[in-house]
Each structure stands twice: as structure tokens, then as C-alpha cells.
Length: 285
Image (tube, rainbow, N blue to C red; front, top):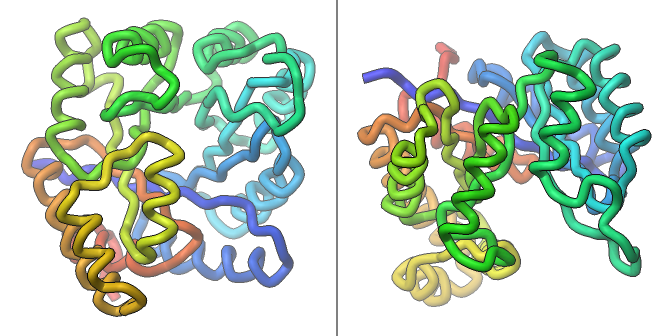
């Protein structure tokens, strides 16, 4: 059985101390030999400078590829083209292309209102220079009119030039497998154009519930109930969360998942523990 590839996501730190901690986290997780690290991008490019600062700092520390997120809603083609050229000049050849969220108070969707438009524009502007990852939703995007509509959108992104997709986090392996099988039925070769499983470790119950409710991800009833029972017992939450996510990853690996993208929350643990426990780390020390 082939081992799935591993990657990690960071978000731009807001303070100098947070920035330094992020660099330290990068150094530790980089020992696990991930395929790449991604760096998120705020609504309407609101963290553009901080994203670029993190990207540049990580590029200076390692040869591990860095994949900046790039969003399009509310932006215009000239600004996106400028950013693409900047990333090309930095030697970046991997992007995570997303619609993004419209900043509060902003009116108008911009010249590229959807991720599909962004994928097409990147290909028109930069050809095959960038490996493009897009978003996928095993439990349906919260704004999609139907599951079928959501699948249609994902298929269109693949056909427009996306190399792979990364799922929203989930805790029901069957939702991932159903989406994968549906894509195959729609003619998407998920070996050549992988469906990467997005993995969210569980360390804080209130944050998890807030994230899930905002993005439409389902938390199984038994997980919600158990987390509620633990109250403020952080150790119990961490131990239970590790068990839940470890079992999820084991199931996905047994089903041949090609890659797993860990939403690290800028932390070493439990990401490092999960990757090593699953036998996915290249680290020998």
C-alpha cells in the first residue's frame, strides 16, 4: 500500500511573536518531509502583505515548496496578474486557488467572482507554470444550491486546469469516499487529479464547533457530545481528538487516499504526533 503524501497549512501571524513561533513550527514540521506548505490569504486579500512576508521567510529557510493561497472575489485581474508575476519571480510554482470571502462592507464581486474564473485566468496568464489546487467539499459548500451543483462546480474546476483539490475538513470518511467515487463517475481521474483529504486535528472544542458551523462541516453527534462532556478538560479533549482523527486517517489510508493536507493551526502538535503515529513521517530522530 502506498503511503499518502503529507502537507501542512499555515495562516499569517498577526504579531511579531506569532511570526517567530510560526517559523519555529515550520522548522519542526519540515523535519517530517512534507510535500509542501500552504499559506492562507484573508478575505479580499486582506492579509496579502503578511501572506507574502510569511511565504518569503519560509522560502529562505528551506527548499520545501510553498503554496500561497490566492483568492479572487472582489479583486481585479490586474492585481491578480501582478501577484502571479511576483510569485513566479520568487520561484513559486504551486498555488491554492480559491474564491475567498468578500470583505465586510465591500460591494461587487470583482472581475473574477468564482474560483472557476480564477483557475481559467491563471492558466490564460501563466500557462502550466503553476500546479493549482482548488477547494472541494465532501459535505457540500454551505452556499451551494445542491450537492450535484457543488460536484458540477468541482468538475468544472478540474476541467479548467486544476491539478488537484483539497477538501474542507470532515470527520466522516464515507463523505470523502462518496465524493471521490462521484468524481470518478464524472470522468475525473483521481489518480492524475487527486482529491486530497483535508485533516483538522481536534484540540479545542469551541473553536472546532465555530469553524464547522461557519463552513458547513459536520461534526458527528458522538464527537460533539463527548467534547461537551469534557468541558474545560484540555487534556481529555486532546486525547479524545487525537483518537478520533487518527482513526479517520487510518480509514482513509486503507481506502487509498493519495494525500492528506493538515490544517495545522500554526501548531507543531498534534500534527507531528499524528503524522508520526500513522507512519507517514520521513523523520528518523
